[in-house]
Length: 265
Ligand SMILES: NC(=O)c1ccc[n+]([C@@H]2O[C@H](COP(=O)([O-])OP(=O)(O)OC[C@H]3O[C@@H](n4cnc5c(N)ncnc54)[C@H](O)[C@@H]3O)[C@@H](O)[C@H]2O)c1
Image 1 (tube, protein in one colour):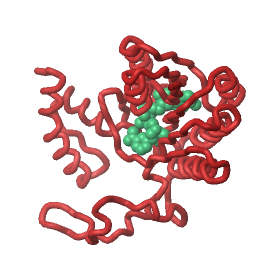
Image 2 (cartoon, protein in one colour):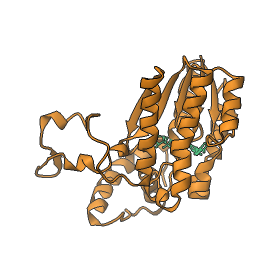
Image 3 (cartoon, protein in one colour):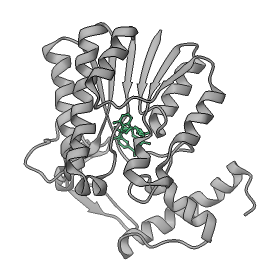
Image 4 (spheres, protein in one colour):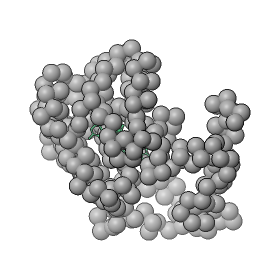
């Protein structure tokens, strides 16, 4: 099988590259290190690209920009893909506020460029789109909660498994990032329904891992753990309520991190 992974040097894309390479598939990765443009040197993903090149057997990288329709079309003209895993994105709420046009171009236009190239050149391929739970905006905040002794929980049993896909995505405040991702999510759904393409959409939330080039504006868990590891103090993030939450999370996670990294520091 030939697999295309966009955002291949990022957190989720690089995991996908390793996963399919381990299974013996040919993997092409597209990533132009735009995370460095968004977040500065701490967001640079080149270290992860180098790691992937060393760790994989059938991985080829192309530093293409998914906004560049001509370049994407040429890639699809030259190679036929069986699976596309689309992870390239501007992933931060707060950053989107500073760069609304760039955010929309990468998230919405980049996605439709890939969908259309797939339709034209690899119409039988499975197209996996990494969407986000932020497409629901603030709507999940309307779900009733119960205050327990030490925490809040959903009040109704039907909510225990998480927010249902039937939750509305309009008439709610998203952030510009949530809106650009919702646009991409809708257009991906439409390519599936209207053109009968094999499109799967995954709405994740708050993911992290060792391949995250974590920065304050995106990759909070990884950033907090790095701060803890360096300073041994628990940072305050946006007010006391969150500080308590993060303090608890970091106290739990830090010993595990030290064990897994073999760190004594
Ligand atoms: N990490 C999370 O908590 C989380 C949660 C929900 C959804 N998601 C979604 O999953 C996807 C992947 O997220 P991630 O956490 O791996 O992000 P990431 O920033 O680690 O990876 C994205 C990669 O895309 C690349 N990229 C950005 N713009 C590009 C462009 N124009 N052309 C080519 N490459 C470009 C970046 O350089 C980066 O390496 C995103 O769509 C994100 O919205 C992530």
